[in-house]
Amino acid sequence: MLRVWDWAVLGLTLLAVVLYGIWRAGRQKNLESYLVADRAMPWYLVGLSAMATQASAITFLSTTGQGYADGMRFVQFYFGLPLAMVVLCVTFAPAFHRLKVYTAYQFLEQRFDRKTRTLTAALFLLQRGVSTGISIYAPALVLSVMLGVPVVWTNLLMGSLVIVYTVTGGVKAVAYTQSFQLAVIWGGMFAAVGLLLWHLPEGLGLGGALQLAGALGKTDAVTFSWNLNDRYNLLSGLIGGFFLQLSYFGTDQSQVQRYLTGASVTQSRMGLLLNGLVKVPMQFFILLVGVLVAVFYLFTPGPLYYNPTASADTRTSAVHGPAFGALEEHYAQAQAARAAAATAYLNAPSPAAQQALLAADTTAQGLHRQATALVSAHYGSPQLDTDYVFLTYVITYLPVGLVGLLLAVIFLASMGSIAPAFNSLASCTVVDVYQPYLRPTASEAHYVAASRWFTLGWGVLAVVTAAFAAQLGNLIEAVNILGSLFYGVILGVFVVAFYLPRLRANPTFVGAGLAQLVVIGLFVFKVPVSYLWYNFIGCVLVPAFALMVQALWPKPKT
Amino acid sequence: MPTNPPNDRPPVLGTWRRVYLVVIGALVLEVLLLWAFTLAYRS
Image (cartoon, rainbow over all chains, first blue to last red; front, side):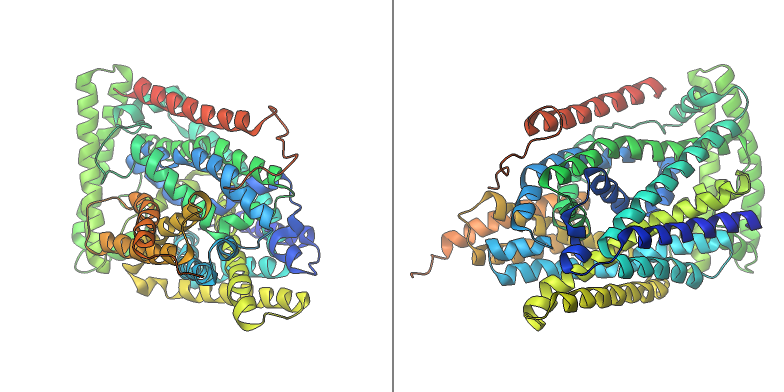
């Protein structure tokens, strides 16, 4: 359980961030101020805001868990990001700045027509509206388990804090809190790494830890494969990752709004390029934390299953309890054998010693897999514990005060990605739906008030969705894939808008519809293609179908 | 095709083309370093 000082650090950090955001945002009198911060933000705030928007709590929980279980290869997922930033700087950012749009979809009405704008805005509202609830629920669940409080409290705490400063201060409050949040996040993560290295056995150090991780196959940061179903390799990272990041940063309003706040196109470009330069090293560092936690638990006995509540439930279950208890006993022996094999390998590295270490690790992993199967059987649905690994280390081994700070890191990371979602959902609703269809001639003050109400509305909806997320079961996975189903097609529409000036509105609209059907078909019929490629396929199919339709659909005579 | 607004010069390196080349060069360097990292610790 958390100690008083940890609760104090956690509470004060969260309060300080919210008050700082409200203070720095000041008052907003018009839409320009509330939605795009008067287009006056410097490049570093644009860049930090883009980074914080993408880095959710799950980035810190799942990525460290990924490093722990699978090693470094996930870093390749981000190889396409710097390339996407360059394309955004060349194409998207100048176009959006020139036309002074509030949303990315507004641009499409000027290039095509209103129905194309409405279609893309609706796809964004659907995808982002549903996924924001899930992005609150996932970290709220992990934090509730680790803090020992009901999930409804962590869900309400995160959601309501974000609603307070986002409704009050609009996009400015979002950007300023994000810069504060990133400072706390990086302070906390560096402290965690320092203590991790200090907690490793004497004389091991970073070099020895990496040598051990390498022997277990966890240091493969660059891998080569032509298999389209293999998610993380150099090719999928560069090509699939490029299209995914370009779709996300170029067509998702939650990101577009960050660089619309830039004081000039130069400030927006520099902010995006800052993100492009920092992202790969940042992800490498977070994965490294997970790998170091894995090395730490080679020498220090850890739990069989890292979710403490799920472990306790299964252990006390009449059906699965005895088997789980037996596995825990075997696991303790397997961990001791693995620690001995790791020490033997470090003292005299040889192929035989490595084989012995791998065999000991395979035995321990096998027991963990059996435990996972028991926990899944107990709950009647697939369960994983990788998101709990890093926080288990934090809560068990970090000193008082720092535990509170690290928990604040997870809260802040979550808030930093939820706030722009509320903010962008409200912007899109007001600018792309409310203003054109419902109240085209109201005053600026009315639209600002409407933006605040829609921010509140989307916030409440997300918190309510999060409250029912546990009942969604496997839908959560589908929601995670939802983005990839739509992003590529929306990107394809923008590619036509920017690069194929001869393509008209109606063929593009029909082409987008056909491409969307194909991408959904790939998902529904379980075609063995990793979801990373959906963005590429959707993006390429839109112009291809649009060209075909235009060839068959002669231009109406005027 | 959007074009660069007038007087839109980067604060460093003189032209945007050079700035973009630095970013792409940094990516190439990162990939090479990570590959070297992979080879260095692969047993």
